[in-house]
Structures are given as structure tokens and as C-alpha cells.
Image (cartoon, rainbow, N blue to C red):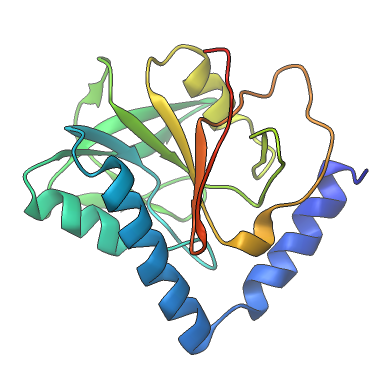
Amino acid sequence: MNDKNSIREKLKIKRRYFSGYRRQMADIAVLENFLNAYGENDSFFIYNSFGTEADTKALISALLKDNKKVYLPRVDGENMQAVLYTENQDMQKGAFGIDEPTGQAFSGDIDITVIPLLAVNERGFRVGYGKGFYDKFLNKAHTKKIGLGYSFQIEEFKEESHDIPLDAFVCEKGIYYYATDK
């Protein structure tokens, strides 16, 4: 079993070298797989992809065109908030250099939360960036938890007691569903 920090480093490197046409085709497949499985829902909390993360820009655009409610994350101190996003909305660079929406934080239920990850294991637990923002957010949210990424990000590791499992992982090869207690 690998520890989470070594997995983080390994998968950051793997993602960095996953580029070009193969990555473009994978992102299209991820988008199609996600929309086929979850596109009928009404509200979505989606990470705003940056760097080598699985792309969410096309997904956000497709959902907005379909008149769905889309929320993006905004980090406020130790917590993450969902903020309603529209295409003409003002954005500002957040604490980690990621564009975040301005405006009022949302506090109701959201149908689907799309979660970034560096790795996911066969039980649906993820390795994120280590700050715990999503685990804290998901602890009090009533939402379906969907990881987004690429098939090479499936990696075995031991989860920790505070980790919250995903309901599913969507990648270019399909969707992996997990038995979750929540």
C-alpha cells in the first residue's frame, strides 16, 4: 500500500505527461459519460479545473446551456463554499490561484457534487490535494459525490477515518460505482 503523499507526487507526474490528442479524447469521453449518467439532474457543484485536472470547462458550459444551476467553489479561510455561477459572472483569483466566483454563498442542497482528485481506490475513496476542503464540505452536504478524472488515476491506498467515499468515479473508460453508506 502506498501512502497518500507519494501517491500525490506520482499522480501529479502522470497527469502532467498525459497530454495532447489522447487527453483531448479522454476529456470528451469523460464529458459524455458524465452527461449520460447525471445530465438529468438540476443542480451541480463543480470544481473549476486548472492545470492538469480533468477538464470541467466544457461540462460547465454544457450544463449552463441546458439551463442547469451550476455552483463553483470559493475558498473562505479553512472552508469551501458553493457559489452560483453564470457565464457573465465576475471571477477573482482565489487563495490557490484558481478563478472563483464572486457573490453570495449558497447553503441549500445540490444534486451532484463533482470532485477533483489525484487518485481514487477501488472502494471509492479519493486522494485530493491534502487540504481537506472537500471532506469538510461533504461532511455537511446532502449531495451525490462524483469524482472526475482519468482511468490511470485508479490506485490502491488505505483511506483514513475522516475520508468520505465517492458515490461514483467518472473517467474516459466509463463509470465506477461504489457502495456507500451515506
